[in-house]
Image (cartoon, rainbow, N blue to C red; front, side):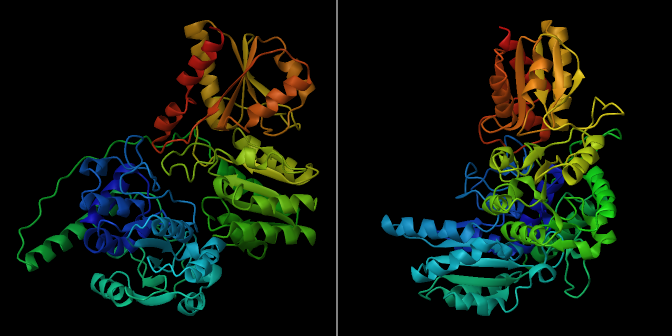
Length: 596
């Protein structure tokens, strides 16, 4: 039943992770519905299994059933676990933190004389994160027998087999060497899992169960059971199934449910069928910056034989599949290990290569921040490319909404941060980073298809620190970057003119941490105010660089910052942009308020 509801939730939301939810759902269901008592807690460190986790919480009565219809909605269930949801004891989505969180909870319980066991789910790909291994030793030293870690060992991570990226080898022996009680079982066999829990419950050491599972378990054509095939990409890792696959999967689960109930002499279930909400397909005019980057990267690689690309288990999302196919010897899959990846790039740069490092912006800018700084102090040249940048897509939630990467990287010595506004600017900025930048660079890319209501002049070439006026105006200058902000700024300028009689100039400034003060002063001097838009927290965003440049130029023009001020919500893109005040209507109202 949990599988059916999880499938429905993902299908209705249009996104989610079926494979990971289904591989661990037998375990989660048993823990939440049968094993745990009132003092016990469970949480998932991997986060991708949130739909299955929610389904089990609904089954246990912890969550209201109506939330089944609101996965990844702003008033519903976030894409990754968040403590604002009943039953969630910690936020997850950034990998490797789970065992450390469990240790903290266990120590706190002991100090407060509170009983209770702590169950933690991790993925097997997650074991590539160094923090997992760091967390094991002290748990054994402290004798934290309250902790039971379950490794969802489905053998697959985002891009390929775990063994192809970082083979776990004799996992049981490794875990035992850290002083843990280790057991292994079939994680999709509920009776076997329950018996394993019982067998280890009295051991005085912290416990770990290696649960062998099948990704996509429960739907025959979603299950990946072959360990020998050369899987290039597991189809059901993320995203919603299409209509035909959804119907086939739902029918298979329903048929199995009815057969099991009939065999047990229980009355057959009645199912409710709901119409899937209409979702707008991306416009044919929508531009896809990651695809444009993929082409531009290959063009640069053809010119520069020392150019290499490194990836952190996100080869599809970062647009690297064509590069890997054309330059297999110059592609390095580093797995879910950003710190290792960035330092590997540092070694490459010291030995004469030009590394281009790829991951989601939220992980690339922050987890290996110290390693990026170390590379910067060596004054080598490395290009970092962070996709999934900004507050949308809003569905995955705050662990994946990269709205602090500019502040995290802006002060790196010699590093230039840029964000292209459209397909055409992607190649131009990459060319600048490769061929003109004196030091390292960070390219910030949105991952959504986005319709662009403007175009760049045919002779446009980026000039460091300078921008381009996309719409003329005399009352206020709205300065922004990237497709999300600039498209809404253009729309807001029309609302301002029609509704408020305010003439707004819209400026594309792709340089995020350096602004040419002389150019800026001359560009905005005729305006009564400057408004800076940031697809980022206001503190540390591009607006700070703009305000600093105006101050250095001696300008007395007032500056207003519009950007993220609180942890952004999970929801649809329209919902999230409205909630954080970055849609066209909210921008127009805020700009109008500047003029009273």
